[in-house]
Structures are given as C-alpha cells and as structure tokens.
Image (cartoon, rainbow, N blue to C red; front, side):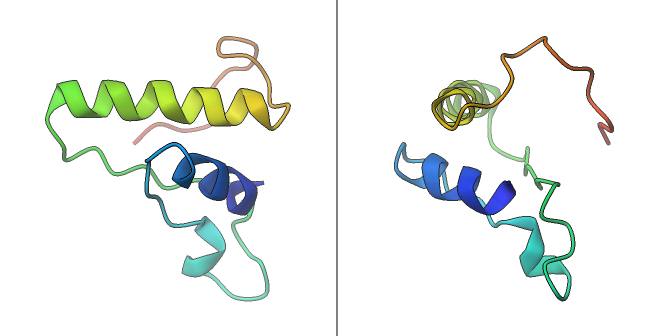
Length: 71
C-alpha cells in the first residue's frame, strides 16, 4: 500500500518515494522508507500529515498495530 500512501502524502505536502522503486516486480510494496534527516519540527509536521494520509486511506489508527521494524 506504500504507492497509495505516498500519493496521498504528496497531496498533503509530504514527498516520499514508494518502496517498489527500490525493488523489481512490485517488491517492497508493503514497506515505506522514511527519511528522518530533517530538523525535528519538520519531521513532526510530516509525520502528522503522513498519519492523516494513512487514516484517509482506511489504514489502521496509530497505536493499533506494533511496528515491524524501526531502524
């Protein structure tokens, strides 16, 4: 669902690359790469917008699921 999510995020001013761009044949569609090199204030705004985009797509509410990986 990362392709749909990156499109929804873009409409809210958050630019991300869908994970299938980093694989072949649609690999990594269920993953999302999140850069975190911006200053904290901008990252917080981006994450709020990303959460809104996720919820608009019918995704789980924050806290409903445990993260699979955080690196």
